[in-house]
Length: 434
Image 1 (cartoon, helix red, strand yellow):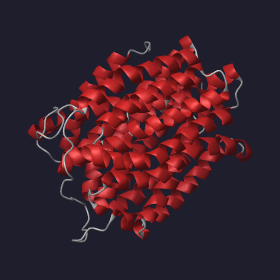
Image 2 (cartoon, one colour):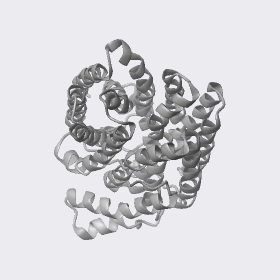
Image 3 (tube, one colour):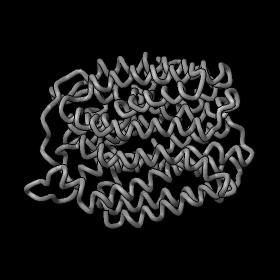
């Protein structure tokens, strides 16, 4: 039986999980047990904030779980109670993601220059305010404004600023730190999709959303303010998985290069398909007779699959080139999407496939986090990764709305998933030379 949300419990469980997942990550990369313990504990060089990694692990769970994954869970109750069209309310959410992508560009520059603490703390406060505005919105315009505020908060608190912070603070150990962060972040839907469903069933969507806004304010904002306190070090020496020229190209030269543009296209197409699948999973399953609760659990267990999949990334990165693993992971996303399109049941089997799709998503998150450093080093990481992430985020913003709009004309969500599998296949083809 699920219990009502207790934010403090989520914080404790996520912090305590950091040690376990980091130890497993270290072992999977060939590190000794002592090394795993060193990374798992909040220790490090003097310039590295002691609690930065555990704090960011918790805040990513809370931020993604509330500001992103709660929406598809409350959407059926929201549209039923308000009478607002699902396409219109989803468009407001999509607009928030577009805002997040656009605001992410200056956020990347600010992180490079001044560090993450003040920005991520302010973003958490703004996220709580935006989500509270959504909860009390009397009409669609106010609802949309609430999502616009939340979109700014997403840009300041989601993975990109956290990736930039850990890449700078951890230097050569960045892949392990990023793996630990995304292992924790992968639990966001696992924790918050079922909790949001339970809160919505007992309190209604408005009160459930208010409670979740309080969780962001009480947990994420203080952790960013306290956990990220520390000096912002200079750029570490570049450590790439592929050779780079002695004279590193400028950020502008990189972002206009053929390779960067191909990589952006591949990740954008893949991201579009992936987010369409995430937001289409609940309607796909309810269309096939599953209850909303069963569908929410499938979505949540997909998040558990993300965490499981990220345990494999260190090994994958050590044994493949950046180009090869990009193409393989994007294609794997298409395969799992095709399976979801073709399997009519039983629900447990579809849930297993959803977990497999989550494993691929988990690896794709780490792939995007390391795509810049693997190819061009760490210089101007915040700016370059924000530029790479912007079209991916915009595609992810449009995907829920486009998916909902296409599902009807295509004859249902199964046909939509088949189309998204084809999009992933095209993305894999582009990635082969990226």
